[in-house]
Amino acid sequence: KQEVTQIPAALSVPEGENLVLNCSFTDSAIYNLQWFRQDPGKGLTSLLLIQSSQREQTSGRLNASLDKSSGRSTLYIAASQPGDSATYLCAVKNFGNEKLTFGTGTRLTIIP
Amino acid sequence: DGGITQSPKYLFRKEGQNVTLSCEQNLNHDAMYWYRQDPGQGLRLIYYSQIVNDFQKGDIAEGYSVSREKKESFPLTVTSAQKNPTAFYLCASTTPGQGIDTQYFGPGTRLTVL
Image (cartoon, rainbow over all chains, first blue to last red):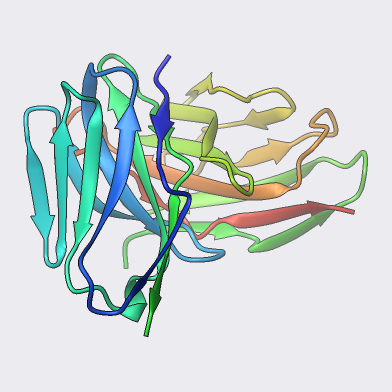
């Protein structure tokens, strides 16, 4: 059974710093991995999707990497801004399974 | 604008009542999903449907029911059999099998049992 872990549960950094969020998974036979952002009381917004054949994806100040052999993904945020404050969740889809398995998220606070 | 809508935003239920949460999408997506989110926990899948008139149980289906009579709509009923229904409910949709199967989420419904 796939399990997804995100550590730490919460993170606070000063504005302008670069930061890395971590996601680990137990079953490396993944189809893809997604990173989502969730603002308080809102739905999820997809940030980046990495297919199993890819190593990384970039969108603006965000870069997500995938290392299937070690069961890890990282989300790199460059030059953080207060507007980046939110909860970030990763989710994994395995081959032959239509379901996503979610981590519990990292709540990020950017301090002005 | 294309997207997913959920209604109501807030819902209050008395003990023993059934309530229905609405989810509508105009993205022409084939698959739709219902998730439950509790504080400090990841999203857990309740039910999903990959095609009209067909749906499958997720990981926590007990006490819930769904229907998929139209491609655009996937309502969730929380029955009185669900003993702890207070949670944030999220609906999502996608079209799987096309390489890029990003799930798109609605804004959510917060259900509170009085």
